[in-house]
Length: 327
Image 1 (tube, one colour):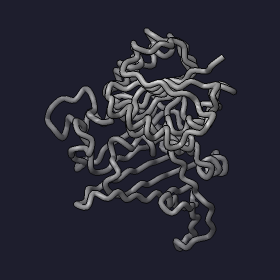
Image 2: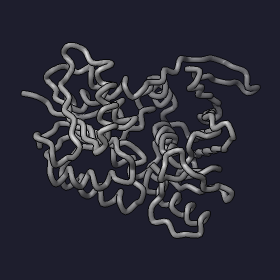
Image 3: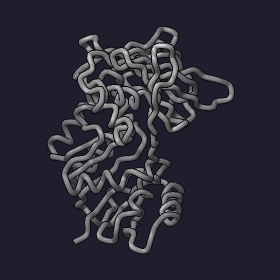
Image 4: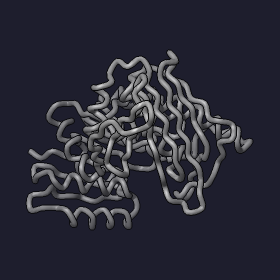
């Protein structure tokens, strides 16, 4: 009996999810849905680059309604955030589904988030959110090593990395280490609205401060804009009194002493999407679990983030924003 997997959205991320699934065998069938024939063609080309003799057969469709199969084990929603809610509603109405993997940001408003959670819960679909740093071995080791720390602070600083669209990655990493149950965000007053590199969306440039509601754990994110548009990023954490640097571009984690000198290091392997989705999907199917963030935990992170981000857009533009124009 075949195991059916659905990918909705064949763009940059969706096509990388598809490439990862090429490592599965012929007992799986994959269905990819995207209204754009160009995106479907690109996804197909990328799949053919990596497929092997026993890779799953892939079917390409432009609508969910046109799918010949209505029962799926796993669905991956790799669309833009502005249409994700409608996709979830359509899937819940037209398909039978056991597991769901969502890209982020999840939605553009807390209202969409709450309504989507209700739909998913009623359908009985077990759901995770794809914040892939959860899968990095070095970060898993750190989370275990510093479990129970009385204070965990993280500072992310850099340029052109997309504060609004990528903040949830670092909120999630902070939560992985600190394990708080609620938190609050404040944008610094000079945080400004700018055009996104993705047409139809906007971005924020400036700083965001977050703290757990018990006041023990803190996060600061800063993103500047430079003329060269080249992304740069530095991540520094403090576990109680121990300072640790995460050098993702160099593939290394460094422990620093009181003088800022390197005490020790471990490798930090960055995994690409095309290296992880197959393992995540197999874990879902074989165990009913995976190492990514549950929808419940990610919804807690998203609610405060979306609420304060909408308010920041309203404050900066003078126009009420009930949705955050980010993806």
